[in-house]
Image (cartoon, rainbow, N blue to C red; front, top):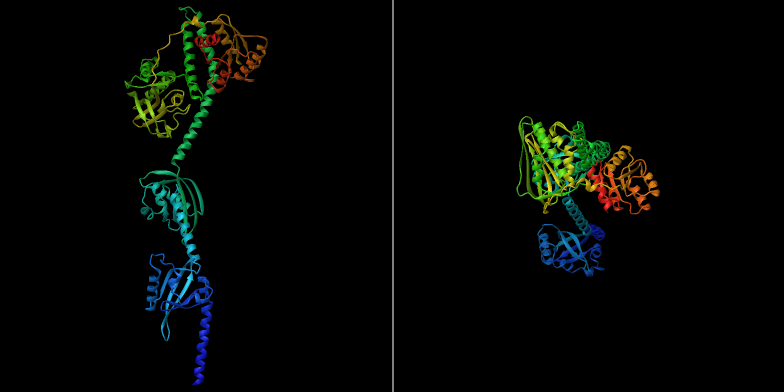
Length: 639
């Protein structure tokens, strides 16, 4: 019997020894509590609470190592008692707790409380695990999630998380909701193909690992189809393969790109037109100038007078077409005056051009509805009259059979962009409208109708293809805007011109020819084209001047080293060799105050302006009349 008791005692001692070893070697803090006080603890407890010996812990209450208030807002002593009482009743407790080390540093802990029954009393075992690093990691994770959620929501592009397998929408940002017009709840019940106008293509892209789609057509809740640019990639999210897509509405960008391309095309065609105009003006100089010289010496009853006048009129009509080309070319100097569009329209309605249109289209009625209180504008009456002629001519030709063309004017305050313009200058405008009930212009052609040389039946069955290009460029040069509305019931062109408060001055009286004749002054003609020099010399002789001629800038410089002249008639574009500006620059090194008049078949370019800054006088465009060249020379010689 004694031997058995000895064995039992030894086994009990061994068991206690093993428990003590495990107790002391545990990685977690372990307490034994009796009557709410710490009765025993292991070595990890000392380390966790920053104590050197057990005496600093044993006998104390758990709330002695806790802040007064726990994170949930309850007093530590009350909360601790409730947890321990529940555990003593046989209900194990597991909870988070805020503890304090000896030095006052707080740390987060996870606590497990269990009842241990002994022969004499009931005690509690508390296992405390320091979860500070876990809490910090969770806080960092929450912070990152919040940061990325904020970035996700603040992103201006529409963002969507899509389940690759099902196509289900998992998450979207606010920009996606705004772009497509659905509520977030509606979106999260839909598939990605529900937003696409090309579902099969969209499904294929979703399964691609990483993709960039420059153009894809999507559809909004209201049925609007729009162009998108998509950048996407795939990754694993919460255990599933997902597709994240950044979607950008590029409708406006594509419109602006098309507008830039169109502007560049117009500029290129304008430069081409300007170059052609220069050559044509040189050719027309003889056709316009020589008939005028011949008619001065021809008897009124001569049989040749009418044929020569016809020749002159033909040259002037050709010059008008060239003027259209010059108008299209950029950099044109447009002479401006204060004018009223009502007066301009009334003059047009009584013009020979108007009579010609009525004869050509006898079944078309052309009427006007003019605002009596119309503001004045600052502009070129010649160019705007040409615009009006082009629009009315096109409108008349667009009508099959009988119909009406209406010319209307009105004042209009504009405070928002017009169709086709990004922005406008908010102000009052005079609006000139030419409308018809003709065939209308197909939507596919609207974007091209203002291009030079573009002509279609809808824009007139005849002509050079320059008419609407002239309209566009004239309005642009007047800092105005063009708005076109067209359907199967007809077309309306609205031209917006900025108003002016200035009044229209009285017209100057014509200047008699003797007032601009010369008195034998010597004029040097500098032109690389022989026919142009011949025309100029004949005109100058008729005006009473003594002409001399040279064929290039270098020859002009050599001539003036040994001679003096009263004035130079200087062509601007000469090849090969130096141009007009370089020629004048070298001449004024020899004769610093040399007078000059500039002539050119092209527009008034920067080269012309630079030459004038150096001292040259007026610019005259070829082909010129006796009056134009005569007045320019007279004014320069009088300086």
